[in-house]
Amino acid sequence: MLTLLLVVMLMVVAERAEQLKREHDLMTYREIIAFMHGEPVDRTAEQSRRLRESTAIRVKNRLAYVVASLIVGGAAGYAIAWIADMLS
Image (cartoon, rainbow, N blue to C red):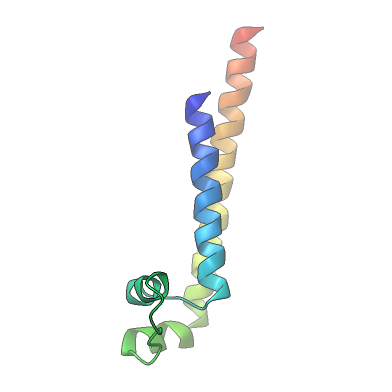
């Protein structure tokens, strides 16, 4: 039960982090750190520019997130069903 609780808490925190990144258009680690420190975010760096221009990367990231969520959700559902079956 504790493991399931930790997994759910981690998923909530990860989703919140991704939501903040989307809201503030943060792509690179440097941008995230600058944002966290309250500094202006430099979006002119070559790496940032390339990431923003590539919509394929955004689609792949979203697809990976959905697939990972399905896997984690399926594993959690299977574990809950297995535990319920063992208890009954």
